[in-house]
Amino acid sequence: MSDVAVYFGRADQLLDDSFEGEPDIRAIDAEHATVSVFDAGLMRGDGVFEATTVVGGVPLAWHLHTRRLRQSAAALELPLPNPRALHAFAAAAIRHSRVTEAHIKVIVTRGGPDEVPTVFAVVGAASARKRPEVAIATLERELMRDSAQRAPWLLVGAKTLSYAPNMAARREYERRGVQNAVFVTRDGFLLEGPQSSIVLREGDRVVTPHPRIGILHGTTQVEVFAWAALNGLQTSYEDIAADRLLRADQVWMMGGSFVQSVTAVDGHPIAHDRARTDAINAFMQTERDAIDAWTRDHAPG
Image 1 (spheres, one colour):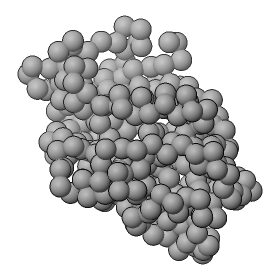
Image 2: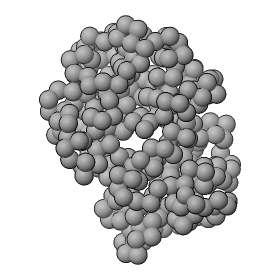
Image 3: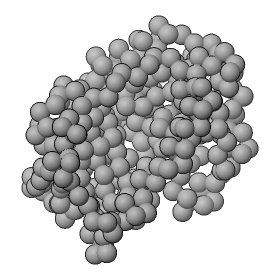
Image 4: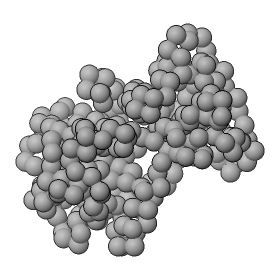
C-alpha cells in the first residue's frame, strides 16, 4: 500500500459553496486510514465519487468531474461540493503524494449517525496501460429507456458508491472471454459499460447514448466529442438501438481519458480502425488546452 495515499478533508469546507479559504487537508497512511463502521458509504453504498487520471501532476478533465460530482450529490440529496475548494483539495493531495503520473479518486459519503458527510481522496500510482482493442459483450439491464424519468429514485444517472452490480457485470464478461461489456435496456437500447462509456462512428457522425436514458454523462465521452468536433465530424446524443453496433463504422469504449477500439460484439467481428483510435488517444495527451476549452462550453449538464 506504499504507493497509495489517503487524504481527508472537512465537509464544512468542501461541501459549502460559501467557503472561500484554502481547505484543510489531513494525510493518513493508507494502511491506517479509517472511517466509522457506521458510515453510510460503507454500510449502504450511500455516497458518490469521481476518479480521473493524473498526468504531469494535473488531474485530467477535472472541471467535468467536479460538475458531475455535484450532479450526483444533488441526486442523492447530499450537500453540493464547492468546485473551487474541491479543486484546491485535489491539487494539494496530488502535490503531497509527489506522484505526477497517478490516479485520484474523491469520495463523499453521507457519513455516520450524525450525518456529517465524510470526504476523502485516494491518490495512487497510475494503473497499467489499458489495451487499445477490446471485444465486448452485450448485457441486459432491467431498465426501459424511460426508466430514469419514471423512477428517478433508482439513481441510474448518478455515480454512486453502490458498484456491486457493475463488478458483477465485469465478472460476467470475463467469464465470457471478453474485455468489456455494454448494458442494453429491455427494449433494446444501448446504455453504457460497467465502468465506461460507448461511442459509435457512423460515417461523419459520432454518436453516443443520451444521458437522459439513465447513464452517467461520461467525461471521456465529452472529450471524444471535442476531438470529433475539432476534426470536422458531427456529434449527437440520441437513443441508439443495439443492432446499430454491428453496422457502425467504428465503436469505442472509453474512460479515464483513454479510448479503446471495439473489434467484436458478442462474438461478431465489427469494423474498426486502430489508427484512428491511436490518433484520438494521442490527441487526448497532447491537446489538453483545446479539449478543456471545448469541454467547458459543452460540459455534462
